[in-house]
Amino acid sequence: MQKVILLPVLLFLSIKVFSKTFQDTYKVEKDENEVTQEINDLLDKGITFYQRQINYDSAYVYFEKARILAEKENLITLKVRSLNCIAAVHYASHENDKAILISKEILELAKLIPDSYLPGTTYNNLGIYYHEEEEYTIALKYLDSALSVSRQKKKRRLEGLANSNIGMIYHDTEQYREALPHLKIASHILDSMNYHGSGTDIFMAKSLFALGKLDSAERIALKRLRLDEGRNAPEDIHEISILLSSIYAERKDTENQVYYLQKALTYNDSLAAQKDLSQIEISKLKEIRSQQEKELEEIKTNTNTYRLLYILLGISGVILLSIFIARQFKLVRFTKDIRNVQRDLIKHELDKRKKKQNRETYL
Image (cartoon, rainbow, N blue to C red; front, side, top):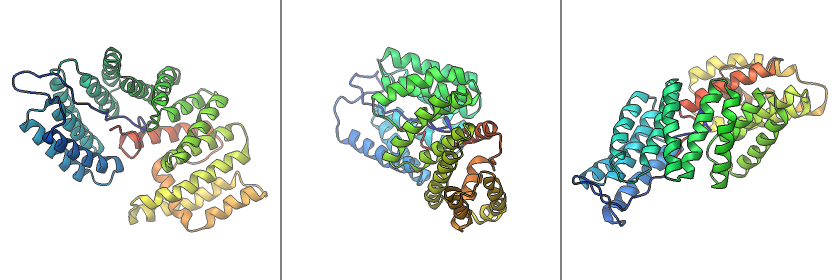
């Protein structure tokens, strides 16, 4: 998305400066003045660190400076935006309790702004945070509120994001039929806005796969793969390639199964180069290499295609690839029961999203 939901993503919404006057103790600036620009610059710098997952501490410093300045100048909208960013840093840093606490404070402030859609943004984020806690009923309640605000205020992007997050919760709880309508709405809205950062299509393809609708799952997965290749998104390409490999395995199309598995391994190379794997992980996960080779040998034949894959597994670089696969998929093994393997893989990917190791963060 994701996870998140997968995980794959699901937090920030763009917040505009409103032109209406707030009550006695707060004011909302009508024009972009010097102070407003300074705050926006601080937020932009923090968002750069946050989006790239470079250094959450640095992101937090910029967001906190923005919050202090907004509070000093009584700029309530920018204060709300700053607090939303701070909550997201706590979420990404596995401090979900703090993210929830701050978001509830934000909600009370946002409700005081006349004719604002900001409460909907915060409802959406609270839905994500409670999804992380596996408090699905509470999460859905907040996301339903976000949907309601999005429709009242005619905020299409918020409507798309809220639907996407609802669909991911249903997917996470294996309610695939319930997930699909929300994911389809989200995909339509976000595609129309040329917004491709969410994992909506990926989760829709996985839900269709889980329901045995292989043709539809393949069509959406291939569409998403072309898109991700065009925007150079290696994590998404890796994820979709694993799904396509599983789809073709279900069809007993071994050639395509191996092709997309090989593609996933290739993209793991670039991903591994971006990750910090500790020596402890390397030592521990090297042990699974031989098992990975045996399991992939099950689909190896005497053709050149399969021989190439087997040779690939022999090079030292694949040790890192195997390590990364094991790390992401909890040592998932490619057994003959492809459907069960895919289910475990999807669950783990959603866990990965929940821990903010994915693209499902919205700014």
